[in-house]
Length: 94
Image (cartoon, rainbow, N blue to C red; front, side, top):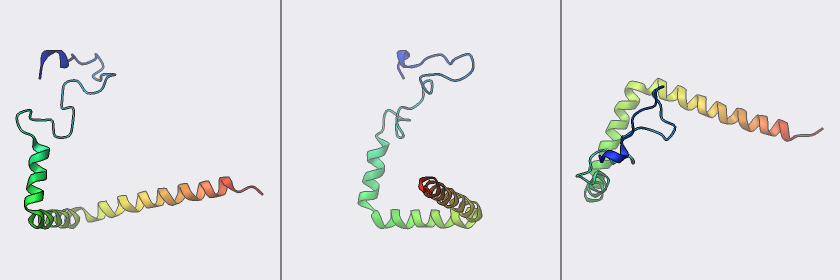
């Protein structure tokens, strides 16, 4: 990183302009390699192995963290239903 882009942190540890230093984009952690295009090229060249690998990783994550994932999805669904119900009852005038 060049010197002008790095700022000292604020006294309280946070910066009002966002993170101090650090990457500017999701794949910007190594300036010498274009990781995003490299990953997309691998997926374009080998779509079936990438799909099988993603399915295997998803299965393993679901196998070990399935209850937590299910609880989170149920919580999100409950919140969405409650928002819709509150909107429906607030919009109704008697």
